[in-house]
Length: 75
View 1: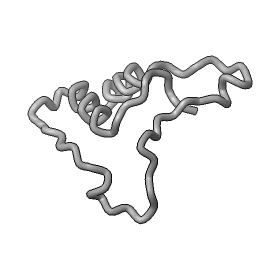
View 2: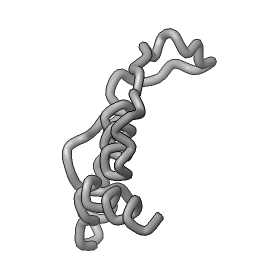
View 3: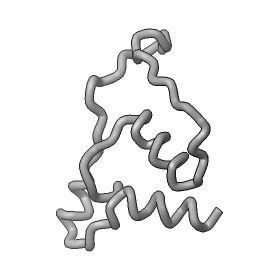
View 4: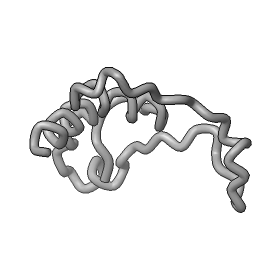
């Protein structure tokens, strides 16, 4: 299962997590996926959508931003 909301890049997710944690002085530097030299090819878009929960009638999870905010507050 995955949270609701539009997809987000790793960079955007990291920036939002740092912002919520009050770490405004930390800079996130984006890198090109090709520069990581991973052994297996990766898709250009790996955003998730939970089709299983919809198919069996489960309520959707909260938006990822709300869940991230809740997680950071718990820390």
